[in-house]
Image 1 (cartoon, rainbow, N blue to C red):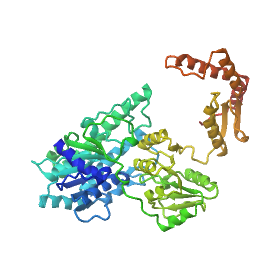
Image 2 (cartoon, helix red, strand yellow):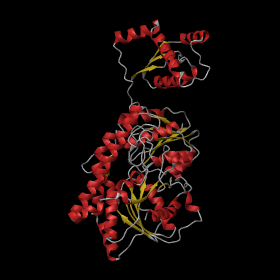
Image 3 (tube, rainbow, N blue to C red):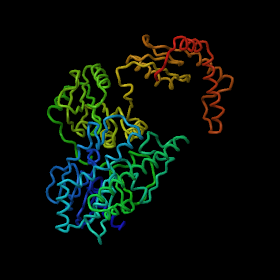
Image 4 (cartoon, rainbow, N blue to C red):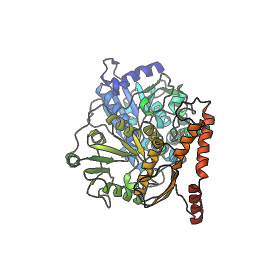
Length: 547
């Protein structure tokens, strides 16, 4: 059966780079696709896959909150769009509320309401009509494609639909960078020392404590989410069909024949994958972008120097940002040089309170067409996987504002690729902070980033105290400079005596004594009169640093 699953996937792969291949699996299949998560970013890969399969002539039955426009023949759509209300902009019982920054531990409170959505969808009139049709017409599915987050409930429902005595190969599909559920059960073991968990902001280079935390995070979060999904599915089938039906949930993960990932190696860290884990994404970038709507084209034409595009995606809404954050963004946009304009995806009908003339607020934006436009100079994003893929595809510089666990990790990947500048909502407010910068290394190349950061912070009204060998010229107000410029002369003298040589390459065994010298250089600075005077002032004036 797993061999059949791999043959089927060769056909399904045509949704991405293989879509133009002449090698076609000739048998036309009946596909069942159960794609339950009412989040548009989760639906995008499934919609691309559905369209590709239908155009290949397969008979496709899709249970989903999102219809694929333009499909009629060979396409049966079970409309469960009503379930989008369970991903709510308001914090209510039984809904998934994403309108705030969340840690990995915060997300555990979302597991139960997210898992229970499946039962509400199965109880809907639309699905029950489909269920009765499958039974009355004795429809048999050759393969079932299931969203990885809902495998327990979708797998159990597939078993119930097909009946006993028939095995339907099941394929999981992940809309995130890897399938941390199914992969583990089909031979791709996750190594927590080298592969950062989806729940953390680590990279593939972790110290020992980060590795321990990463291992625990991956184990605990996977176990918690998986257990919640399985229990929710059993609870539904037990209540809807009887206690004997809850066993339909058992063994679902081990029944997955193949896992498809709507991404590729560019968007995650290297890892071992078993032969039945196949990366087929990004699946939604095959088509050429459409022309911009005329009102947006006119807005872009009027931007002589370029356009900044601001969108937080389909889950996090910019209307949910703190009012001080919104006002601060508007302040920055208002101060942009003449010739720059801003397109802001704003989910309300009215304008953004206080927006300037160079800002256009739109409730809906065609993101592909916007990012493909040559006048777009920067993209302010939360950093979801599809946005990451589109950013790379169209080559647009990016500013990241991660609000959830996965976004923080993606932000790190983008930053490592030098395509992103990151900012925190903490600093995107109208408040001024006391900021201490200790940057003592007597090297101009090391000092340049700190000098640029200092200048930016001071100009934004923050009170900045800097211990450094290099002064930032032109700054007076809100800027306290503790002068360590003597260190350049000191470093020259150390090199002349042979105690420190910065011009040769050190082996790893020589780095320890080298680092001792570097620490000694810092000690020298902290014993200087300039630093001691600053230290006394901090104590006398009781200065408190926020950052």
